[in-house]
Length: 232
Image 1 (cartoon, helix red, strand yellow):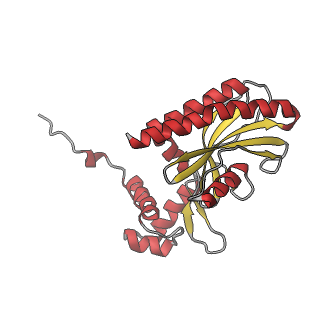
Image 2 (cartoon, helix red, strand yellow):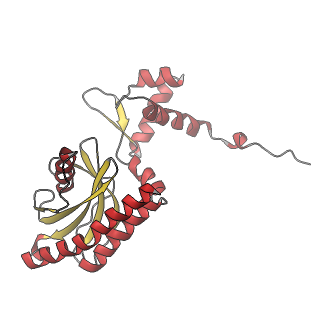
Image 3 (cartoon, one colour):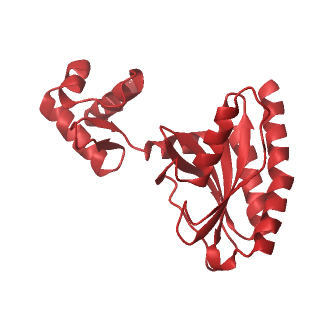
């Protein structure tokens, strides 16, 4: 009988080395790491580390700081986390909420989170309109400019004060030619946002009010369910 091979017999050495390099960005507190430091930590040759980083950069999983020449994880890594998180009940609740808002409003709806002073779009529900606003999930926006960032930072400053669950409206500052309406999603020790994007030509006052009413019907219920699931 043939001896059954172990899983380790099938490993691809170059892939194992690449994963080792990626893991070093997760282990420590440093936001950036240089080639020499990574070579020392992994005990790989500097040339091998350079080639691994060049490949990861080509595919968008790391980026290089031009000033320091060090490397850091890029926002595209969130896609891997997103693929995993979608399987978790809390994310399913959020996905269900944005799909309901999209269905009732006809506009594109996104679930956004803030990380390292940037806003990322993790979940999405499409518009039923021919002309709509579509955002790449891994594209980052400065939190101090984007409506979701402004709303999250405002609520983060309240801390022990009573949280204001009113939505925030942006008329073209977050994205030119787009009206953005952000609703707060509040969990234990974490605040994120659901954002509805409306092309400006379609965003008259009556429509904006209608969308706000839909959001205020759905998002508070979502916050309630998220709170209940945290206590389970």
